[in-house]
Image 1 (tube, rainbow, N blue to C red):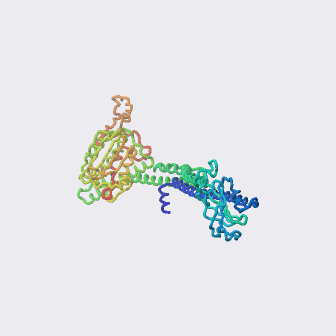
Image 2: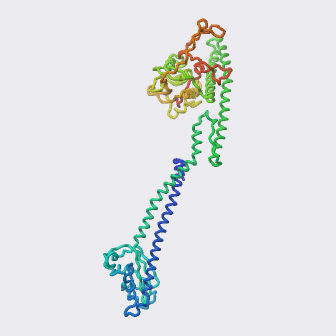
Image 3: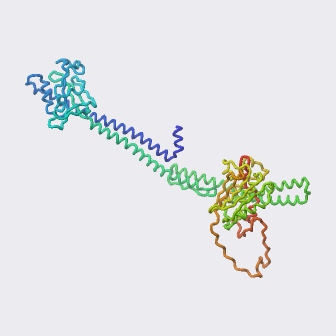
Length: 576
């Protein structure tokens, strides 16, 4: 049973069904084939034996006839000679002189001494040949023997008794009779080569046909099982292609009310329950995160005002500073939760604009950080992608902040082009990411071993946000080991720009007296950008799913400083 279970696990339903059908057919065909060969051989042997026995009985009847009574001598022998003369079949008549004439049947033939056996008469092909077998029979006794080598004259010559001698295996049937009060034994023989040829032919047909029929049965069973399981495979592929945002889809329900139909209906009911539960969970996270933003903003502002009037060295000021840090961390956590909830519900739709990744990387060199002991080394070459500048800035900053928390002294950022891909690599000289955890660190709220500490500001969402943003840009992110620094390496690849985007139409020039005028003709405030990451992309429209009381948070400032990303290791990783 254990072997069958292992085979079932490895082969699958279709192959297991085909193997079971082929095995059953093979067993049936082998039993049927062996039975057919044995029955055929037995039937041919019986038919041959009956034919030879009938021939011997015919010879016995003619020997027992009374036409030789008028001749002097031994009438039994005379009749035997006359009966077998000119016969071309294989017939021989023998008697044992030790059987006394007139002795009872239980004292002659096979029951007698069986000495001084003489061949009374024989057909022309057996003329001059010794007795065919060693046994003699009592009257009314029959016996047969297979594959007896018999030497006889070939009947192809001018005279049957003058042809060349040849030896063949034959079946010999003996019949014991009493003729003129003399016990005699009549032998009738026939070659068995045709019988053996027929049996061999059937055996070869069975031996060759059984494997062919087994293969055909197994193949048809495999095909039919595949057709029967096609709805199941369609359901599997449909469900496998569903993401966490595609739970509104349903599998096709077959018309038949069989096991497959019940499975499809049960799966649709399960998908409905999961969709409802997920929608409730996402709505709760989004609503809770949204409702927490205003109180947190109030608390942060109150702490800012409260601390501004306190002496720098006072204990109350230190407490306020700690509370301000915790409020800032909680604000970042809420913002990350709200971002992920919106991404789960409606997906991420990045703006399409050309972005210089090398400028974003160069900005990380001068960005201030609490980790003053960690140096950021940036190596970049000009590479441009199409995407959302703010989201790409957030990707890089999350990775750099994560690396700073776990690095000993150095974080290396590299931006370059590889073919038609733009590659961002962030290395650190920390403890690295174990291979078993390199895929898991991109899950939400993953905080491994060393990253369990809450004091580092990580919440387990930074790398999850990185994975969402990179996927929205058609790229990939993976965690590996750094060959140079010996710690962790996070590698991001996104499609690079192969051709410049079509330029937007240039608006009509505005008159000088209206240039820079705001609504109502008032001078518009001059925009300036002091960010190291480059100019702010102009926001033309708010997100359709942004709440009325929320600021449009598509710009870089909305994505920055939300608690850095992280990577997990048993001694190292803190997923934010």
